[in-house]
Image (tube, rainbow, N blue to C red; front, side):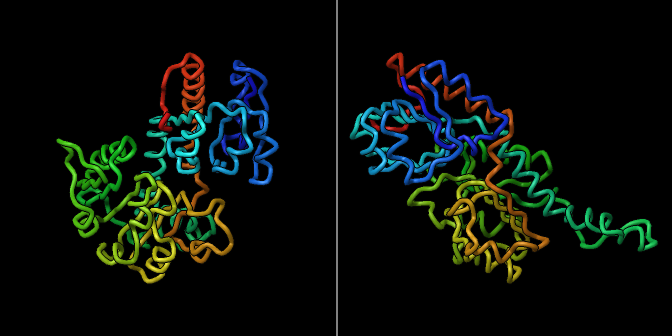
Amino acid sequence: MTVKVLDADTLGKDLDLSPLAEFGALTVYPKTVASELPSRLRDAEIILINKVKIGEDALAAAPKLRLICIFATGYDNVDTAACTARGIAVCNVRGYSTDSVAQVTLSMALSLATHLNEYRDFVSDGSYTASGVQNCLTPVYRELAGKCWGVIGYGNIGKRVAEVARALGCRVLACRQHPTKGDDTVSLDRLLRESDVISLHTPLSAQTRHLIDAAAISKMKDGVILINVARGAVTDEGAVAEAVKSGKIGALGVDVYSTEPMPKTHPYQTLIGYKNVCLTPHMAWGAYEARVRCLDESLENIRAFLRGERRNRVDGG
C-alpha cells in the first residue's frame, strides 16, 4: 500500500507521522501545490490531506487512489461527489478540536473585551513607569458577566463555547442551521440584535456563505465583538473590514480566511495594526493534544477502511 501525506507542514512539525507507515510505504511532503498533484497522486493508494484541494482533475491523475483521509472536520476542499463516482472513500475526523477551538475563541473574546494587549503594551513601552501613577484604566473595559453572547453554529464547538460563556456569567443565544427537537436556539435576526459578543462556528456551505454580510452587520449592536473561527467565507470579509473601520464592529477576532494564507490584497490587511483586531493564522484547531487526537482518529479510519468498515465517511459510497 502506498501512503502519502501531501501537506505535512499544516499539521505541525512536532507531530510524529511515522505511525502511518503501518499501512505501507509512507511518503511525507511538507506541502503540495496544484501542479504537483498529478505526479504525487499517480501511484498513491491512500492520501492524508489537511488543506490541499482535491477535485476532478486531481482524481483523474490518481488511478490507484482508494482512500482520502482529511486531517480535519471540514471537507469542502474535496469533491466528494467525484470521489463517490470513482469509488474513492473519503473520511474526516470529528470532535477532535472542540476544546482547542473553544479555548482560542474565549481567549480572543477575553483579550479583546479587556484590551489586554493595550495594557500589556502600556507596561512594555515604559509608559507605566513614566506615568508616576499606580494604575491605568484606559481604555475602559467592561465585564462580560451579564452580557449576551451569540453562538452561530451550535455543534460540538459552539456548545462548548456556550458552556464556558455561561460560566463567565453571560446570557447565551444560539443559532444553528438545522435546529433539532429540544434545541434552545433562536433566529439569526434575534441573535444579531441582542448579542454583545458573536462567535461563528458554522460549517461553510451554500447556505452559510456570506452569512455575515453588510445587511447582517447592520442588525448588530454598535460596538459588538465578532469572532470568526469557522470559515473565512462565512463572512463577507470586505463588509466586516469596513464595519471595523466605522466602529460598528467594536472588536474583531479572526482565525480563518476565504483565501489562505491571507494574500496582500485581502481586506483584513488594511486592519493590521488596529488595536481592536486580533488576526491569527488558522491555528485555533491545532493545540498539540487536538492534533494527536486527529492523527489517532485518522489511523483508526484507515484501519476500519481496510477491514471493509465505514467509519467517519463523508462520501456517498
